[in-house]
Length: 76
Image (cartoon, rainbow, N blue to C red; front, side, top):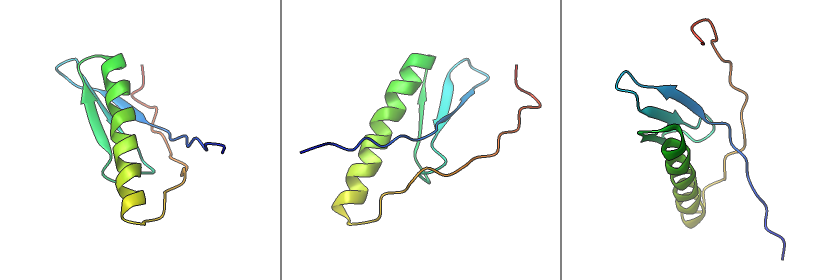
């Protein structure tokens, strides 16, 4: 039995305190944080897995990737 892997774009924003907030535009309400880049990525992976698990249990459709416009004016 083959396993399908889903891929989602994550948006990571550095907070004023130095930590990071991560959101997944394709999964409304899926948000996480981490004190480092690596922690934030690990935490959002766990949040995505939980989001999809709940969606499957509730027999809700699994969201697919959506395009996101990025504002790069303030990007470093």
